[in-house]
Amino acid sequence: MTAGQAIDVAGLNKRFGDKHVVRDLTLQVRHGEIFGFLGPNGSGKTTSIRMLCGLLRPDSGRGTCLGHDVIRETAAIKREVGYMTQRFSLWEDLTIAENLDFVARMYGMRGRRAAVSRALEGLGLAQRRDQLAGALSGGWKQRLALAACLLHDPRLLLLDEPTAGVDPKARRDFWDEIHRLAAGGITVLVSTHYMDEAERCHRLAYIAEGRLLATGTAAEVVAGRRLAAWSVSGGDASGAVARIAGLPGVEHVTAFGNTLHVTGRDAQALAHSMGSLAPGEGWRVQPIEPTLEDVFISLMDQARDGAG
Image 1 (cartoon, one colour):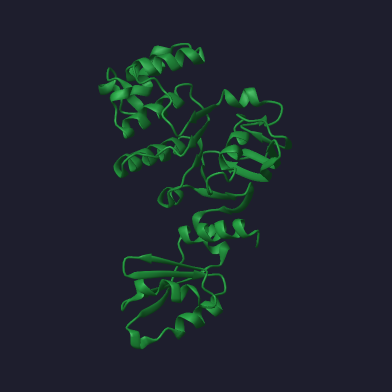
Image 2: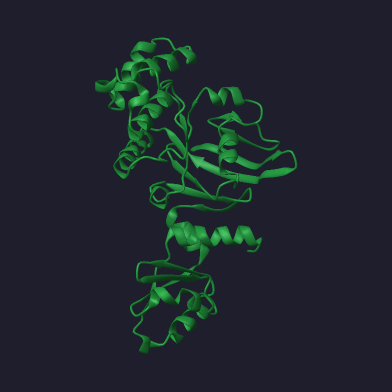
């Protein structure tokens, strides 16, 4: 295992029947890093994460997770992983404290009462310890699920779309907590569809059709795609989507109110098309920086078309 790497794998593959779900995944994740996985539904990102964490055995490939071999030592990896699923999976007819105590019993933890007390205090749940889990809001259920993941002091957290269905304030509080945990040395793998959450990760991986298409910091992923972007506003810009979409160099046109966001990979052709828009129609046309969302939409198209 490379020094400083919590995860270091090469050439991981996974098939389910005739479907090749993950193809030759090679990836490194540092200790204490928040590493985000993005991609369309069915892209293979959750399967990839589960293989990295010892929850699913790869068909081929090699590598380590937390110093353990991902093929031969999956049981050892599992003991050091906390896994939070997208759907709330605790018991709604038990209280917060009872849920945590039950999870501690399943782990066979010694000193479980002290561990439950630490989890209640650490996640701000102590004053709600006697509330039924089924009566909690989405944000508090999320907090309880995270507390259950942390009971056995894992070194690695796996979070599968953890903020789906919670309000913006709860999402922000959750991510503040994740950054606190990472600062304390816990490595975090998280799948998400939210671009603002992706930007809060230290590094990202974009997976589509089972292949890793891009990896790096948010800035590195955006720069690596070499997209050009323009804004078109004023006049009847919102009514001109079809016309602009047909111009040379234009790959995507997205409306934001009365402003259009136009992107493409052929910067010269796109600039020429943007310059050809009739100024007499009252449009304001200017180059802008592409966003992470622009890049992921472009990568989705690449995967769909099977083109580079």
